[in-house]
Length: 170
Image 1 (tube, rainbow, N blue to C red):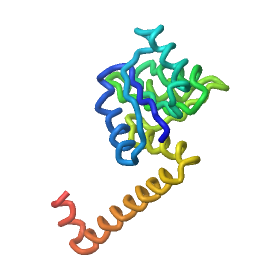
Image 2: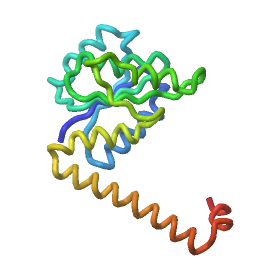
Image 3: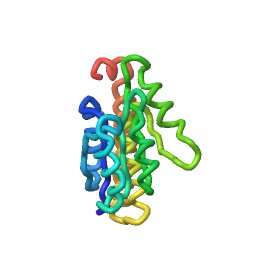
Image 4: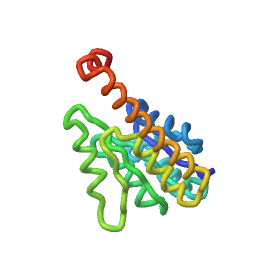
């Protein structure tokens, strides 16, 4: 199965990025997780980005906070899809990260998910890979069906016990 690179500029991003890894695990998508800084390890970063396609990566999920250059730098070098995850920040709540990743120049696209949206980044990566992988597509359909069943079960519980009791048990 195709590989996804999960990259982050700092270990402080790991709790969020772990959600992407867990989601890919659930779907059976192989990945590699790496901490690499586009600012502090420029030579290592460029080597990693230039060789990502050759190393079998089909999609890169890059999490970044504040200036959030990592996803855009990957998109400038890696010819396949890059998904950016803006990280929540103390100073601006992640809006700085979000705007930095969203505002890429024409010709250098980065798919961007919500602030700390690692689960959706993993699902988007899986959907990209599923274009040519029927087994993965079946797993994604099952995942969607599981979500539907969870909502139906919650509504059934609400209908059976009423909202006051439901809230008490939340």
